Image (cartoon, rainbow, N blue to C red; front, side):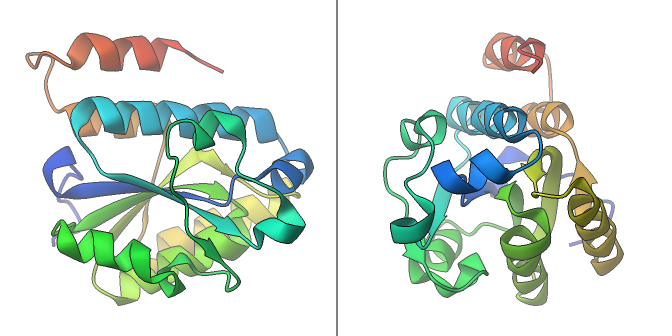
Amino acid sequence: MRATQRLTAPQGALLVIDLQDKLVAAVADGPKVVANAARLVRGAQILGVPAQATEQYPKGLGATVPAIAELIPERPSKMTFACCSAPQVLEQFYGRQVRHVTLAGAEAHVCVAQTALDLLDLGFRVQVAADAVGSRDPFDRDVALRRLEAAGAVISTVEAVLFEWCETADRPEFKAISALVKERT
């Protein structure tokens, strides 16, 4: 894929990483990260973009927050930080011929970063919704986003992702996507 290629819905997927009770409570702007990730999931559902979520050691970090769990009921658990170690994640991407993956979740400098780097290494284009990822320390999040951009990931925003997936105001889903964008957190 070309670095300038737009990341549209037909070949894309969304992965929400480890937005769990105890982790979100410690993340800077945790409620905002969750709200933005939920908007991405709802947008993905409207536009037919496959969406997955993962849980990091749920016994210790708790369950996925309700706003995400309600939207994505099946979430593989993992012990490694990178989501690519959960076989279901890659199986779904390969099975649906996904070429690019949009990431949201926590923590930006650990699980999100390691997942992004693995996906890039596997040949996927990776997009990170900067306003839908977080870390306990905002400095860690900011450094992670810079590192991922230098590695080849596209750093974007929820609004930009939703409109890029939608592609045109002519499609029937546009009004629903526009309404999601207006749900500013």
